[in-house]
Length: 166
Figure 1 (cartoon, rainbow, N blue to C red):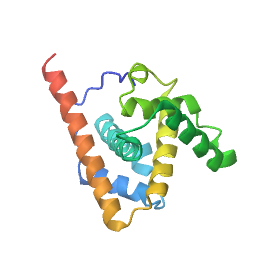
Figure 2: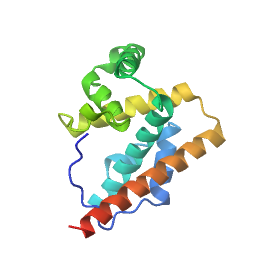
Figure 3: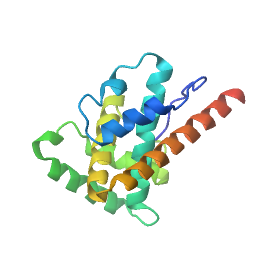
Figure 4: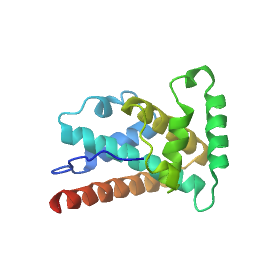
């Protein structure tokens, strides 16, 4: 996906972001609060990136190293069927393209979702589906959360490096 330039100056993934992701993945009440109402733009970026990190880790675990675009299309179709009537906000093209972008599919690298909400809705639905399929125990979930946080920190650090080189 063609990522917009995001100023990550001063953005840091900290313990509270990891705790918010853990609460969200465990389905705890009010877990969406920190993701929906951040104290600052930097906090909003940190929460968005850790969620994106979890999405990327889950997709990578499911589909790599071997996948095909038809595998992704089939997965999204099955996911939408499983969701039933609640699936209406999930755009299948957005979901497919987000997965293919994570997997490095060249045609998906320039894809831009129609809006942030459709991308987040798709990411959350895919993440939920993949974690349900993985059926992780407590140790597996903690490893998943650590990998997600590590990715988020690396993603932010890479963008901080880009802003210094401009």
